[in-house]
Image 1: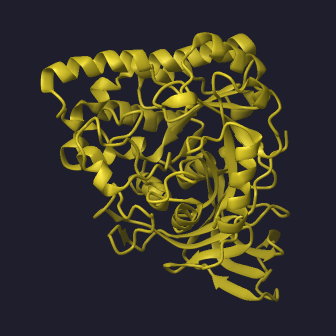
Image 2: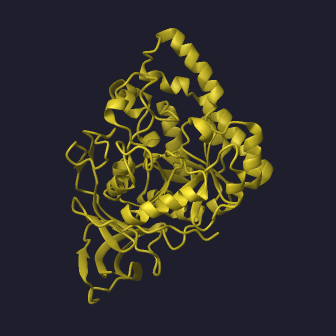
Image 3: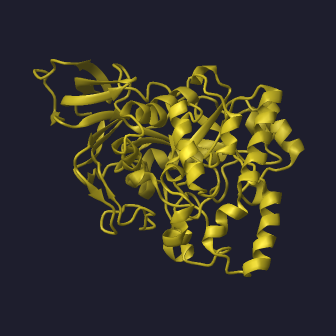
Length: 444
């Protein structure tokens, strides 16, 4: 591998911003210092005036492979996210066929080893009848057990209390949950069907998939985790009410943690008027007060990590009526620069963004040698130009689906360079044609 020398960077790492040089050799950070200009390297990057961060580690993406090639695959979506500064991802099991056994995980690992631009790991999906797979999961290679306690179909929807109790009792690694109460949602759908017929306005989405449906399911998951002493990570919190379920303790003191997603930190229910189905997702984007409470929870440490829930769909599918338009949106390419908008607004310090999008994810999932700018660690880095604006347009969107909920938005920052496992995956608007992602490992 080529050696790389980064000079004059403002390094944002472990709660500080310091002027540093970084020397990368054989994929790893060999030296961090202030006087490395004389170091010989195959490639030199002068980072003067820019900020160097550990790459974002996204603990929740849907890359649609296998099963939905017209929407996306590991190649297309990982290529897009490295352009957005994401260097590692953990991919969800709701593919076709679903990832519910070791064989399916091995198949995904093989595909990713050949086609992923970012580092990768995969969740094992829980079902009512795969408890033995869960018990025997490879804890070094598998990021977690994913339970869809709502918002899924087929075998991946697990809302039977007895099944859930068994899974929580026996899961040997962290459980990540999608928490919505399906029965409450179904009751709400009937109410709005009576009011509007099949053509329900999209602003009703957070009223159908409402606060109570989220809180009821999240509190049940937490009850199960406490009963069995299970390590639980509740994904994509969307309501102020749910925040009362989580503590503000340090991450290492917590057995139950929470995630916020970039779109729930950015949009609110007033955006349905213009965006409509394009911001239809599960759980739903809710009120401005909910959004602001989640932002504050990031600051107050009740929210432990920030992710994307990147979930592309074909645009023609998203244009359908309420019940026929799928939920989810592509977010990975613009996730980090959307978080930087909160920095520019004076809300999130850069050190906090790095903590929630990189450091805390690595610590929570016990990632091996990633998530920090440290000597000996893999060189997963992103160079940010805080003063160069970036406008999202059809011409620069890299998702296979070809659209973004941020289309037309002018961000105040841009991604200059993304380095994945010591390889320059993206630089100055161009993705390197060679996928360079490596498999993630966990120290459990």
